[in-house]
Length: 86
Image 1 (tube, helix red, strand yellow):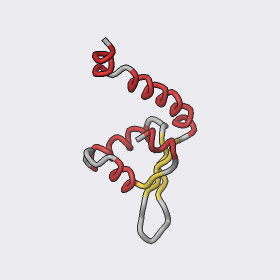
Image 2 (cartoon, helix red, strand yellow; image 1 turned 90 degrees about the vertical axis):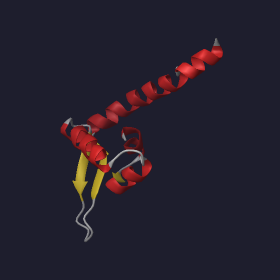
Image 3 (cartoon, rainbow, N blue to C red; image 1 turned 30 degrees about the vertical axis):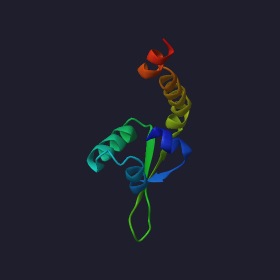
């Protein structure tokens, strides 16, 4: 989710579509935790059809490059790649 939010703000439905194997309940819980931790911002819209927009907070924006480096490191050090190299 943080990687997606680093690309820009998203509605809850967009997050659900991007992560189809995750339940809506689990996504909601994770988003709530990230908001409570100050990593993301939750902004309700004033549209007729009520929506919530999620975005990275300033702290989340500082964290995003660190997580991206960790993700890249993990991709390079997967067990199947290590076994293939041996």
